[in-house]
Structures are given as C-alpha cells and as structure tokens.
Amino acid sequence: MTQTSPAPLHWKLVVDAGDPHAQADFWAAALHYEVEDNSALIERLLGMGAVPAELTVEFHGRPAWRDLVAVRHPGDPVDEESGTGLGRRLLFQRVPEAKTVKNRLHIDVHAARGQREDEVARLERLGASVLRRVREPGGEWVVMADPEGNEFCVH
Image: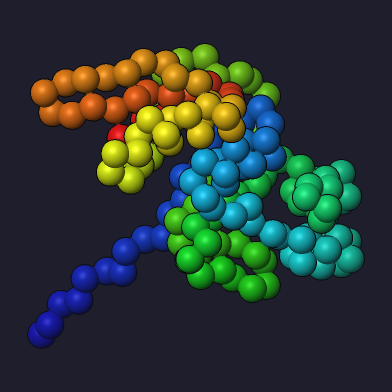
C-alpha cells in the first residue's frame, strides 16, 4: 500500500495594524505586490444584506473592508469570485492597540545582488526607517521598520 503525503497547507501572514490600508499600500509598493480587490464580493454581500455598509470603506475608488486588506504576489492565482489571492499574501487587520514590543516574526526582503543600499533608500522613500545596520561574519543586512514600526530586514 502506497502512502501519500498530505497536501501542504495554504497560509498567509497576518499583520496587526492601526491603519491596515496604509500598511497595505506600503507593503504593496515595498514588495511590488498588488492590493487585493475584494470589491465584487463586498458588493454582492452588501446587495444581499449579508453585511452592513459600516464594515466597508472606499479604498482606491472601490469598496473595501474597513478593518482588513491584503496584498498578494501579482504572479499567484486569485479566486475570481472573492478577489482573494491563493498564493503569497500579507493580510493587514485593524487592532486597537499600538505596537509595543519587538516582532517575534518578521519579513526578510532580498534585494538584487549589489542593490541593498538602493533598496534601503527606496524603502525609506516609501516611509520605512533604518533601525540598524548589521555586519557579522555570516553576512550583512539592514534592519528597518515599516511605517507602523514593524521590523523587517533587507539583505
């Protein structure tokens, strides 16, 4: 009897945010991702009376969830009915409290060879800040913070 391995699980990284839409715009620009367009699903749910209008806002000229927005890799598949990415995604969800401690999980951004400093400068123009530059025998990278203070590294 041949035993098959279970299929890998689908996942997304969820990031708590004070302003999920601003975070989505930053990370979409930072990673060259796309902000997901859930407007068809939202309009359908609003039309059915399944969700109240108070749960939505206008974002980039279309209906969006007030407290949730995701960015996705532009080359990954998308569920056409919901606009939800089916691959690499970051979901930003509104929370009432501000960030207070160092991240226990973070994103590493890998710049093209020899382009780290150009990438750091581009990310600073988008609203990130440099926290420190690391030079160790195992490598070099720059620790940065996004506009809400979430740490990430540029290698």
